Length: 105
Image 1 (cartoon, rainbow, N blue to C red):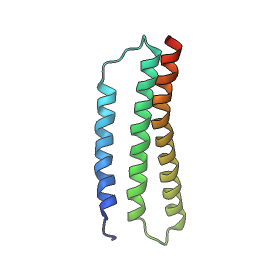
Image 2 (image 1 turned 135 degrees about the vertical axis):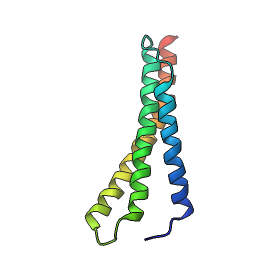
Image 3 (image 1 turned 90 degrees about the horizontal axis):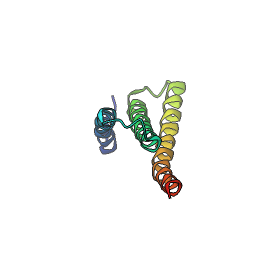
């Protein structure tokens, strides 16, 4: 078994922080009347969910045997895709707020 590096420990900590973020986003009071807040809430849920997938895929790469090339490639592709999806959701959140602010004016 491979020893975990500081990045791996940080990823595990980030995994639990994303779970806490999901719980907070799910238990927040809902305002279904406002479509802007519903979209913001959906983006927050997507950010935390994609980050959870990234954390699982990144840590899972360390525990796979190097002979399982197809599984290792799948984990790397999943980690890469979920990382980019997390990034795009993070970028979309302030852009959506800017666009919504301009529509209100």
